[in-house]
Image (tube, rainbow, N blue to C red; front, side):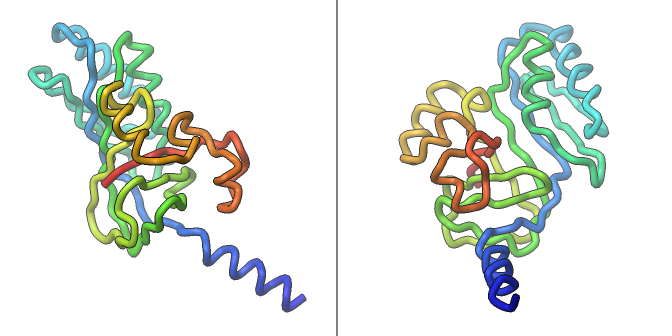
Length: 182
């Protein structure tokens, strides 16, 4: 029994868990041509259950999103809302408050209900307010994604889905994993 307890304790301690809560995001949209386009995205994102407010910057085709405190964030739902409005995501940065979140090369960090694979920052510990950029396919330009994906040999970077290499972190193959950079 002691041996089983020890194994469980060790496995929990080896998986980095992020003590973080995302409070806001900055969304860059592509394909906008007028104020009506901006309004369509604004309305679509505002319908998401975890979004408290959205402020559009028409001149820069960007949106400042504030999340409801304590609500579960769904990053793919933000992208889907933008796409359902007829546009594409050109960039998404999340701002959160971190408390001793240690980054280890090629290990996922759990933040809320999601897994995040930091492609940079190995050995750093995140504290205080930090901005992270989602760099998965369709969250950045095709040119940016091509450059970023060359920096990692892990197949999950191409798909956004956990692979056999991720199973050592307790993730089943096929689970969603977000690739981010600080």
